[in-house]
Image (cartoon, rainbow, N blue to C red):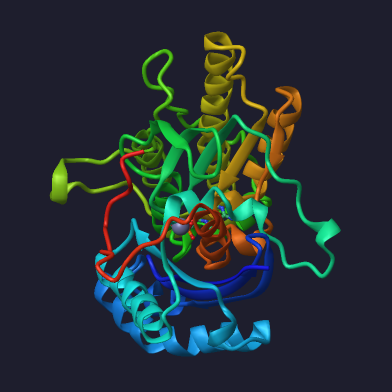
Length: 363
Ligand code: KG4
Ligand code: ZN
């Protein structure tokens, strides 16, 4: 049996978790800072790193306590060391190093984006038979979060190659910006998701950017601008002196719900269209490499509409869908500790010179 303590501080969630044998979650503690950032309508890096400093030790202690173990019982300490806000990452990385150094336990460096693609594999269960099935490879990976909208070709949880990415906003970022335009507050994703269920998704025809024929990249900035004009009317004048006809406050609740639903339909449709392109291209290029599974992760994988559309899509294209349980869609440390088990088994360890890195691995 392997017990790994995972630590995650890449953005505005301070998280720690203990995972057994890479799959069974014994504790999953997440201290969210949403309230601290709400008034700024986005994450303020300096506030985030200070809050991580305050939260990190109590969160780690609680994760050990909930798992019913002592630090001495863990086999390794894993931390998300990239990508993310550098000041936030440093807090988790320093804590992990200090624990590894003081206990002599091995240290494991985990890529946050790769961990999102592992999140569907972990579960909080009593009986091992209740574990979600392990994915079959090759697989298509899709990370949809506040920082990423990236498609991957995957041959195992650690052998992944990016084949498409956003050229401007990430889809979660587009949701957060759309919520600012609709005056719904931060974080926007869950609020738009909820409100969209009360609106008409066909009320407004918003663009689904496909980019060049065959491109697997994404673009959401045109959708954001189209929503801005749908809400506020066409601007008179340019730049900072531009004046709009109206604002979100001038619209009825039903109109706001219709706009939220139309935005969501366009954003998710663009993602599904790119998935179709990916699977068609992969199947055409090489029968052997034909994907067997679709693995989705990241904050936006909590989205109700995406989950429905991805389920239909996977069924139609005969792919097995792996999508995390709700608590593992958002940033969490169970996905960090879970993926670390693969590193542990492969003997892939970091040393105390391990850096925190703001950018993604060049996968
Ligand atoms: O993965 P995550 O927790 O952090 C990053 O690594 O970025 O993702 C956060 C993003 C935010 O942009 C948030 O608005 C979005 O995920 N999100 C959602 C939903 N829940 C969270 N977007 C759409 N629908 C949701 N239900
Ligand atoms: Zn994330």
